Length: 68
Image 1: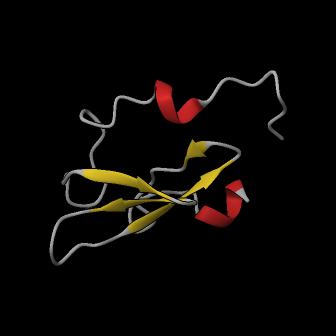
Image 2 (image 1 turned 180 degrees about the vertical axis):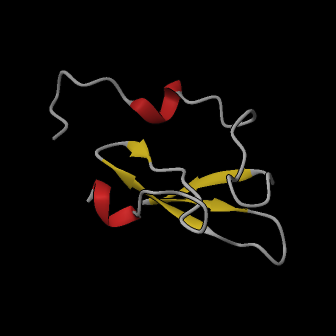
Image 3 (image 1 turned 90 degrees about the horizontal axis):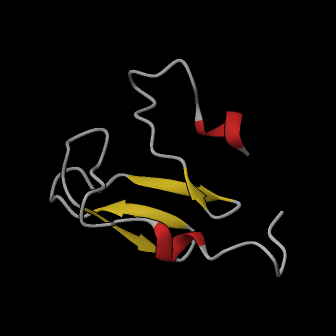
């Protein structure tokens, strides 16, 4: 859980360097998700306690539920 002493992780993430793990396209942070901007992909990834969970569920041993 984030508290008042926890740094704002959103400002620490170099979004210009982060890529979608499915298609390697550019992503943007929206409210509680990180979204791929590539037409045809449009995958979204949850943000859990301020940290984006950037996994390709199709090829990962983990699922988004593992991080909820």
